[in-house]
Image (tube, rainbow, N blue to C red; front, top):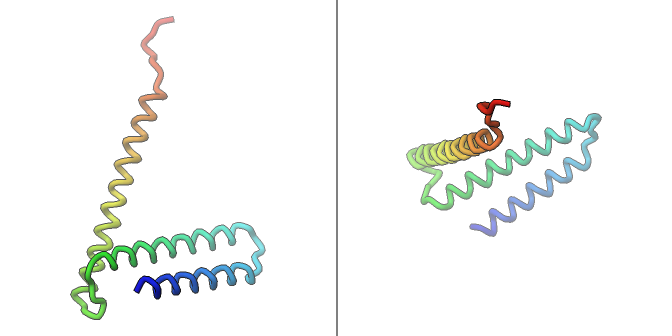
Length: 106
C-alpha cells in the first residue's frame, strides 16, 4: 500500500513540475500563488492519507466515510487549537519581555 502511495506522490510531483516549467507566466505573483496552492494541496493530501492509514476506515461504506470526515476535521480543529494556544503564549511572553517599566520617575 505504501509503495502505491509513493508512486502516486512521485507522479503528481512530476506532473506539477512539468506543468510549472511549460506554462508561461507573465507575472511572478502567479508563480508564487501556484506554488502556494500546490503546497496547500500537498499538505491536505498528506494529512488526509496519513490520518486515514492510521485508522481502519473502509471508504466504500458511507458510515466509515462519515467517520473519516469527523476524524479528519476533529484532528484539524485540535491541531489548530494547539497552534492558537502556542501562538497566544508566545505573544504574551514577547509582550512581557518588551514592555518597559514606565513607573520610574526621571
